Length: 304
Length: 243
Image (cartoon, rainbow over all chains, first blue to last red; front, side):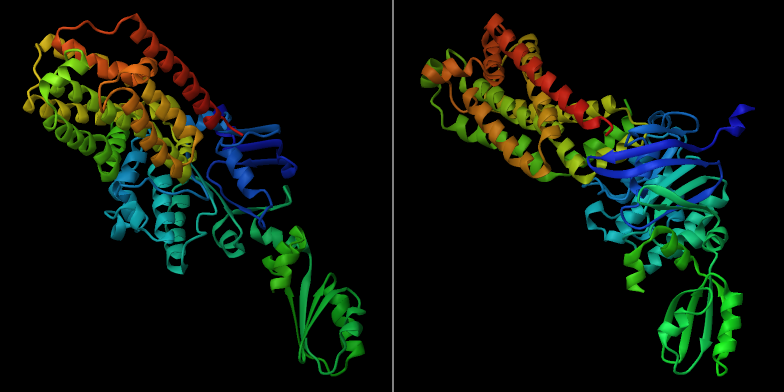
């Protein structure tokens, strides 16, 4: 049947500007049913704009966005999208349980409110009024609102942003179960570890463009670099930079960390030029390095 | 109509005591204070033959009812401030149903005001044949239409902080110039006849054997409903449009 080949989400040449700000500049992507996909990127990369277009809250200036082959707004009105926006308060004068029930009532095939309360571990504050919640509890209640819809597609914009470590762990435990049940999950995040650990596929965005798209192992491979670590007394940074294949140098006392494009050549010269070098190790670059290199995120690099 | 959603919209409204006091407590308290201090014979002259209990029952019902339907739409501003409107756009809830829920809940609170005011009115001696009483009630409910539209308009174009003052100010102004506090005469009456609230108070005349609204009354209510309805529809459309 044709239905099987219909992608969950499809972007064709999508661009979106807000005034002079080019939020999204020409994105093509397809997300198949059942995938768990992270939209990863620094602030201002266009993640939220892309999410808003998937949810039908924003319209592309150019190109087209389809959800299950349909206009996202129609898909939303048909109750096919469960969404969690980045920002948003909860209706006052209602208890958390009542709020979830009021949202459940809007969907054709909702989960039971009690089940969702148990799944999202919000039993402790389910009977509390919405204005008596902490920031993390509000996020978890909002997640429960997205889940109770029981849709095949869940779209979450920076879902863990106000959660503490505990809340974040519980959130992802629930999400694992949701993804394992065959649902399509798309989430935006700027936490590398979340994308790495929980997504089958990472779409890396930078300045409104897709700069990488694949499993986290593929993204690491894209950078193609390696890290050579060694113990070496009295080496000069400028000399080390001159070695074959070295892109950058970090010195911490006697510890030398070299980012390389050709680690074999680097190691050969290292032995030749520095007879006293010890403890050489070679490893692939981390996802963090891939992220920095692909997004050109100078800010993050500086923080390290 | 989604009855579960409507039920929670109502629950949320009834639990907000401060808004409730405005629509119910304040009118009934004012009614008792004013009516107990009136001399009936002097009042009949000023009101054109409507006894004080009937006059103020209807006048203050109009006042409280305006507050009820205004705040029904006014809650749209609260939803907007919370980002709740955006959340609802992701759901199958139809925008028209959302709007209807605000109107229905506004009218539901107005009907509670009505029950309380009629009870107070009857206790204070207001009497009328059942069919006259029904006609009077119908006119009051029709008179609230422009204010329901006004609530929706205001809810879309202002922010949540401004809603309280706008509501209080509108209730007082329309109430006073509509004759809810005292029967109007002179220039105030000339002005009042162009306001929908005047004709709500005027509906009390039906109870003592008077006719319903003259053509002028219907025209005033119709014009206000139309203008505010168009403003509300435009604000609603602009607010739910995708950007």
